[in-house]
Image 1: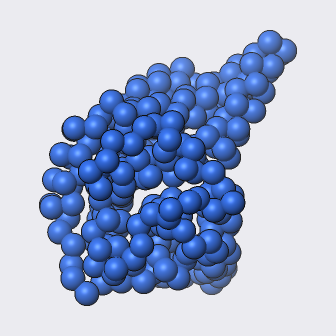
Image 2: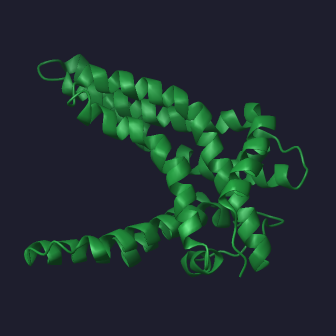
Image 3: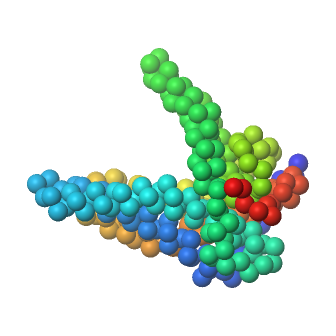
Length: 259
């Protein structure tokens, strides 16, 4: 099993991203909209005490956030991978066409995520509870490797579900796909997806001590940055999948999406 090069992966991703920034940004806007709705709903809920108007706005934003989370964001994540795969093959895929090809795959993605939670997350929580009950300081020896394993597997699930034509659970295939490259995959997760979400999750609680307005401002700035960073992170994921699937001789895209 060959080893991928982190430097080569990032370089290839940047070239592809730079040449196709406009079309890729269409997918980023949807994810940024979700993040902004989440921040706004949190802000208005904090201001809703004694104000029916604020509470109503917060409720509407919360509904919009969940619609985006359960329907639009998964379609954006799957659609951008289909779009990237077309670009890698030398095609000029349309944004609308890439979204159309996600038909039938959102439920497939969600079911795989739920199965992964059952397999990895619930045992992880059980281990944390056990170590806490025993008052052992060594829980990180188990929790950190399991958490990193979860990240690496879920990272490859999205392009696999977007581009492969066989339905069912892809968790075992994801393990097989990244075999021998777990550390490199995890490194790329931290260099892209994880790093890009740190400002919105860390700054409000550390620098601004949870102040509602400051949290909203940070979220607004982060949402604007996501228009750039989300697409690049997804291009890295798509290029990585292309490299790993080439090594493993896995199919990349179906002729027709599943029903």
